[in-house]
Image (cartoon, rainbow, N blue to C red; front, side, top):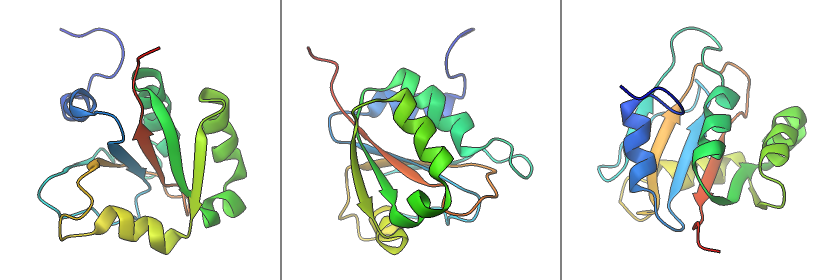
Length: 141
């Protein structure tokens, strides 16, 4: 029995598959689940705000090498504390800022164009614009 780190087997499977430039999205409750066949969608919501996006992102940042985050402009405007926590856990990470509509399009494309998007984890987060895409790096020095 695994006793430390992430315990959810579906999330662990996505982490294990992650290679350089692969993407994992962590989204709020209002974000639709992607329906393309090549990525894993995981809904971990239990009740309102359980778990939150940060409840998922922080353990992911502890497990993954993340070289870039993709975040919506609206998130920066509406949720600055959220971004401050992510920056604090991953200082110096490249930040790509796009519109919320572009973020949705990047994740929800159903024609398989974005094969780098390997997973989406939807949480119970009930705050608007609490979505982030983590772009995996490599652990080489």
